[in-house]
Image 1: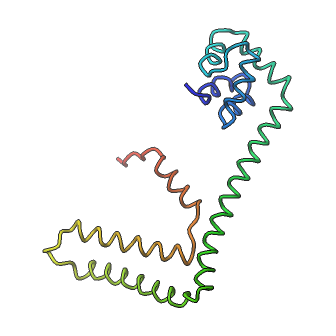
Image 2: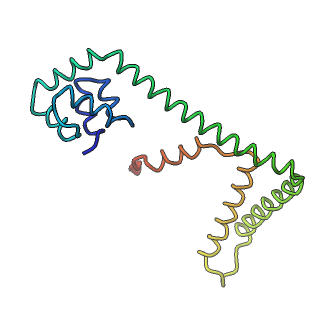
Image 3: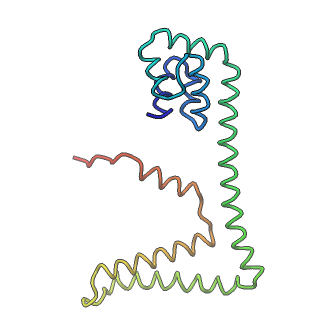
Length: 187
């Protein structure tokens, strides 16, 4: 069991405590909660105390009320830290793309990179149109053709990401889609 499991239980009686236990400072807040409840500083002990002792939930709610201002400050500090981390990540992504473009301009390779990019995009588009309308030799396995076309697509995406940028929000969107539950098939 971890602190997030305790957060759900404690959050029913003390919402601020539940929020803090579920965050990265869960173990530190757990120590304060354990002291308030008179248990050992483990998720199991705290959850067991809340589940078995009806007074524990009241003690927890009372402790939250007595320390409300301090706990709200912790919640706000946590939110500020998350915002600062996201802002720093975005700034780092922007600086990375900017430095890649600036180095090609400063090194005098911008014109060559532009023409190389056009060549790669044209080769990809031409190959895919050729396979689509003309086909491919039957002596070549379809899996090999698919892999080559996939590689060319990846190169094209890298070229486009270099010139137009990619974003961490796109990466996050991909993670969310992968973690989403499957959509049932239409009947």
